[in-house]
Every structure is written in structure tokens, then in C-alpha cells.
Image (cartoon, rainbow, N blue to C red; front, side, top):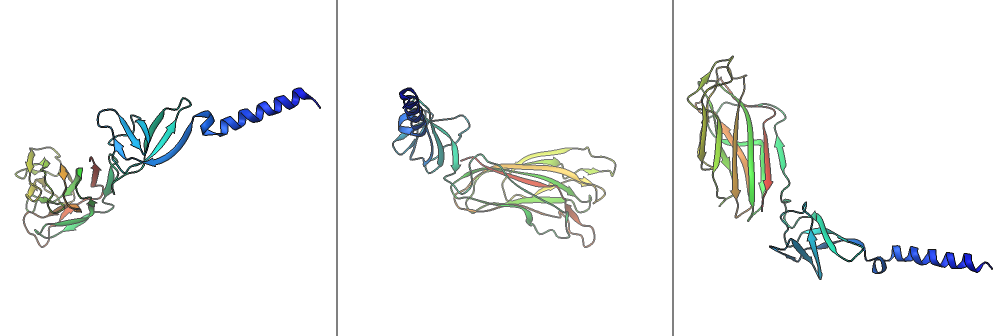
Amino acid sequence: MDIGAVAQSITAASAQAGRDDPDVRRADVQTGIVTAVGATTGTVDVGSIRARRLETYTNPAVGDQVLLVQSGTGSWWAAGRTVGSTATPIGVPKFAWKTANLDRLTTTLSDDPDLTMQLDANAVYRVEFRLHHAATDAVRFKTAWTVPSGASGNRSAIGPDQGVILSSTSSGGTGRFGVHGFATNCIYGSRNDNTLQCVSYEEATVFTTTAGTCAIQWAQSTASASVFTRLAQGSFMRVTRLA
């Protein structure tokens, strides 16, 4: 028997066993549920493990399921969440958009069927609408917001001013830059052809107390039985939960 070869085999097997055993190598990867957040230390507790958060793990919350990595020296790091503690992940934008034009012949505001999302209770959201709309100076385009009951905040409205009548060859003009309540009607100017679009932008930070729908409402400002107002393909909504 070659004693040297046996010794080498035992040494190699021992080294491999050490690489395979976390208790030996002091390195590990696992998941766990956050039980406490260090407000000023940059750490989270997962049961008895205290892990330092990586820069990419933002807005930690108790209840997050996180990926934990243990270094060879025994230090723990929280690489990021795998499942959030809330129904909507924090810091992850969600989008909705219009795949086709929608035309209306009414002054009654109603939710757009595409630009709508559900918001969680007791949360803070950044909500944005980019609207490609078309009308004529006779009917114009108006908006308001649907928000969950009890929600607070104000929305800004940026676009062509309601007193502006643009020519079919012009996309310029005077703008509006007001801040309003969610239910306030905002009326926008338009070009003098209801197949030529203008762009408007509305945004708000929405503070919720109950869950519910957030949507853009829109209609004509002045009723017409024959000249439609349009919210066009490509308009979109972006919602990001902040807290």
C-alpha cells in the first residue's frame, strides 16, 4: 500500500468536506424574514442574524424576505429582498399604457380603462401620467384623478393652457403649470384638428389610508355630438411605491 497516496487522498477528502460544510468554511447563502431594521446602522435582523445591507437593498421593512450571504470570516450581508413585506414592491415602478386610441363624446369624467392601477392601504406612491390627447378648440380636453378613499396629496398639471388654440401646423403655445386637488378639473388647450395631438403631464405623491383605484379621468370640456376628444395610443401611467 502506498502510504503517501492514502495520505493525499485523506487530505483531499478532508479539504472537500470543509468546502462543503458551512460550519467549517464559515460561508453560506440563505433566505430569511426581516424581524428588525436598524434605522441608523444600515443593518437588518433576520432572527438572531444581524446583516449589513448592500447599497442596492433600499427601503428595508420588517417582513421582507431577503437573500443573506455569509462571508468566509463569518460576516453576514443582506444582498436584497426576494419578496417584499407589502403587496406592491417598494421602489419598483409599475407601468400601464394605451395600446389604441380612445375617443369620447361626453363632458362626464370617467376613468380611462387602461391608465388605472390599484394602490395599497397606508402607503406612499409616486404617480405619473403622460397624456397624448387630441381635441379642437371647441371641445378641449379635461382631466381629474380617481384616488382611494381618504388619500391625500396634490397633483401638478403641465400642458397647453386651456386658453390656447394652436394651429394645425404649430405645437407651441402658452403652458399651464398649476397644482390642484385630485378632483379638480384641469382643462387643456389643443390644436385645431382633433387628429393632431398635444402632450400633457400630471404627477403627484399620493398618501393612502385605504386600498383602492388610482386612475386618470378625462372627457370633453364642452359637449359635442360629432367632434370627439381623444386620449391616444402611447399615453402611459407610471406608479412607484415609496413607502
